[in-house]
Length: 297
Image (cartoon, rainbow, N blue to C red; front, side, top):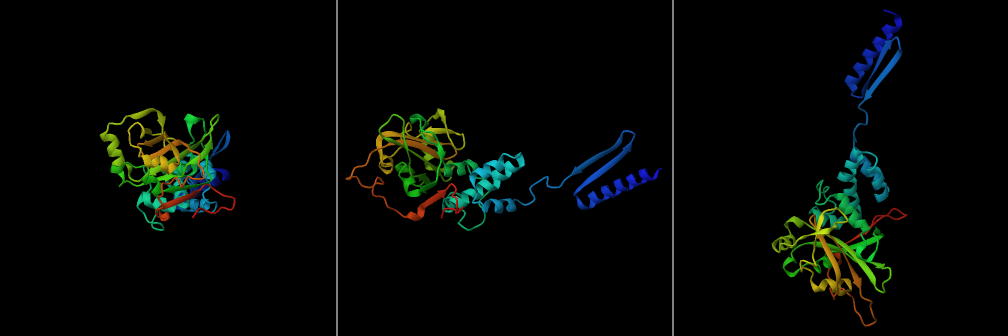
């Protein structure tokens, strides 16, 4: 055996032994008439070794939604990490009290469960994206700061369903093309919708799911609360909308979206909240990202 072949064999044996001890990989060299063929395989960084490190990196940039979206597009593995960790941490960062109410985990406590009905990406989109109003040709858009309130949510619950917990945003106002009045788009989310009285009423009334409308946040099918006759009159007053000019949908995952035509206020008009000034501690504010990187309180 030539000296070169002997050295190649020694190298191959040493590399294989090192890989078995360290678990970092292996390298093989084959000496043949056609030259040297190098074969390498490595297990280094085949998985995310510590997802908490990735979460800390994104926390330093205030969980910028665009950055999370970009990382989720890199690979299936990173997309899974984003869906399981990053979107959840973004939701906690932007609306800690709201997430605490929806999951039953107190603020500052252990991380909420790995899953939430509808998925963390859908909840993050609901916090940071206004779906607009297709019927009025108003496109959706990313929002700046949005306020979600349980007090407002109670205005959207039928009397027999007042025990449910529902967060609803303030309406996002848009100028509709060719119309004198503005359109208000709003969104929200139920806690534990599968066990809610609202869902039980919809099923009990045999309300049909809409054929042409889908949830803009999770893609699930929706019920029209207007068609089901489950929109309380206080909802119009809370929104400051014309009575009867309102759309209100709830999907099977418990996400709510809708829009209304906003009535123009006069100097004699009071607050459109119907005089309801209950605790502000029930409210949650979200921020979709700012130049100084601060999270919403």
